[in-house]
Image 1: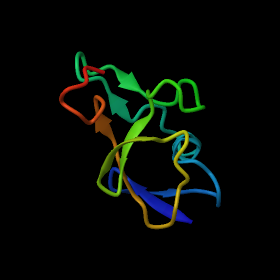
Image 2: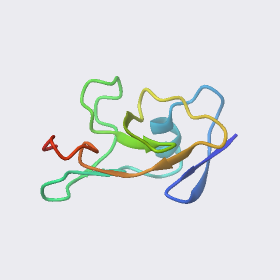
Image 3: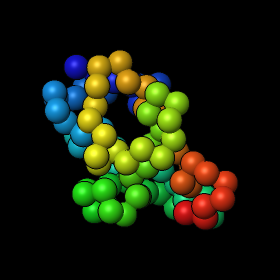
Image 4: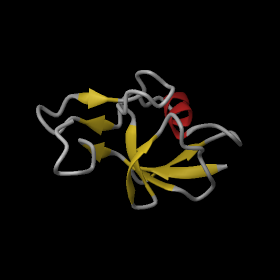
Length: 88
């Protein structure tokens, strides 16, 4: 099955997380920090660190490591935490 990431089609296995599918597709980072623009991707892989945040179908701050990839999902990279009141 496929979903889109930043306008590109990504192949994923059923039950695979968005983070795992992005790594398999060659991506290592898909979020930048609000201050300094440092790249972030999967760090802990268990939903603790929030480094892998993405926007899924218009909903910001979804943890890619815990979000199951679904056919037709539209995933977008994210800057910061997706909220202006958080500094990460």
